[in-house]
Length: 219
Image 1 (spheres, one colour):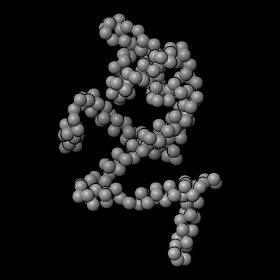
Image 2 (cartoon, helix red, strand yellow):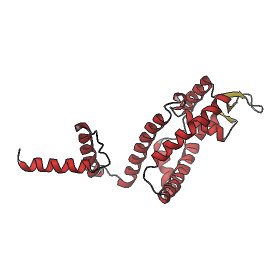
Image 3 (cartoon, rainbow, N blue to C red):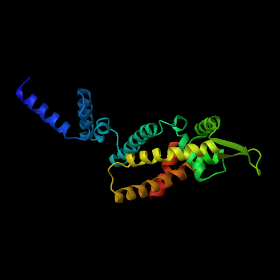
Image 4 (cartoon, rainbow, N blue to C red):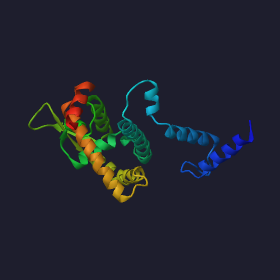
């Protein structure tokens, strides 16, 4: 092992200390994770696919990766933000907030507003009913359906959790400037509107059928 190795190592440590990942109590493990992340970011994801002789769209794959990562980060932040409201931590809060904004929805309507599959949404609604945060009643026009509304307890949970949710949202927006937030919001709305149509019209379709629809929309 020569001197150049230690010089390079010191340069890496200095770069780590100047990065956003560095904290006063950072450990060797933190440094290792930072090195791994730096190496990952430096390597183009297309390299793997080319080595395996696959065609790849770098931009679209990168969008997919960033959306997935952001979803995971947001879930972690939401769990922290709703630490005092464990009944709302597993996406229950999105259902409660939707009913606050749009009361008297049927179960299916509420599930579809949240973009879930029926089984997942049914379990969330079941838990909210068990917690006493929402209530159901027969639909006056269709006895096979149930209408949902927030209870007094649910309304109390909504008002007490709002600030924590707002705080979580501010953190999730990170260091984006106001103009960047507005631009990102418009792009996300455009993307979500597109996928909302796919969710409504192609719910039971396979991936090849959805892909064909996307090609038609682009042409």
